[in-house]
Image (cartoon, rainbow, N blue to C red; front, side, top):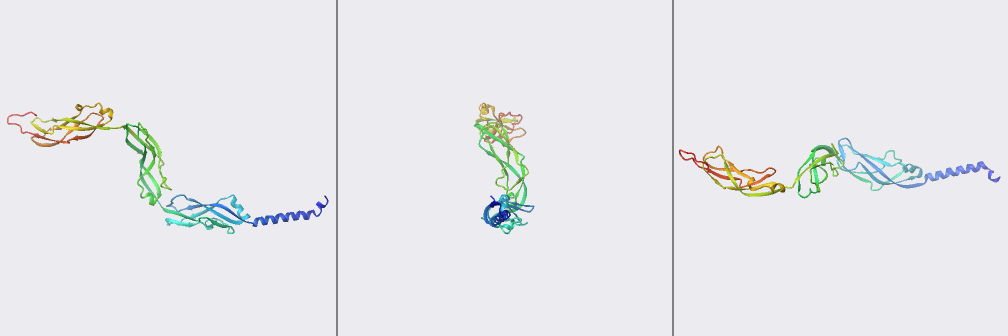
Length: 310
């Protein structure tokens, strides 16, 4: 036990020197570690970059344990400022010159060290908004009208893309099985325009739904003459009329519900080609009158008397 405390001070000093020597040796040991570099891209006002402003590269750092110890807790960040006036496809090699306060005693090896950047001027335009419809309504129904509010949006992006932009699409609006009118709140699609700035991100798309309409032809409708007292000759005497409506409405319409006539008021004797006018039932639309015109001849009145319409 006594031997343990013999030369105790020398033994403590030797232990401390050994620890210091070990620390120095460990500190000077050369290590290699793998880290990622975040490359931040910066442009001047009035310019934009296509795609992300932050790119990531894998790198290997080589140096002493003491020098590399700091990189175990903090990320490696590099910054590239694109020179003003430089546009188009640009290529940069990532190196320590872009990393602030880099210790030159640390060796940096960047794997796949080059990045390609597309830079262009910034352009702002107002463009229409177009609805993107998917699917079809329920059987027997149709889309009668579609309205987008607001109708336009202010877009800011790369000049080469925004200058040829014709419209901005909405997200898909699903019409499958729709049986009544409905409004949808939908976002605008910009996935093909990155980066892009919009004056608004959401619009209202109103869908007006109605029953599906069909056409029905009614033949041999007599042409009536109105407003003429003189004897007349008409060719042809009948027309066919095609009207459009819902199946429910058309099923109740008879031929006698339609009228075809010529307005002969204030015309004297002679030969005329007149447009056939028609009257159709409510809730229907006139599609066709065949023929559209008729020939009418008005005779001279006999002397001394007025002859009535034939």
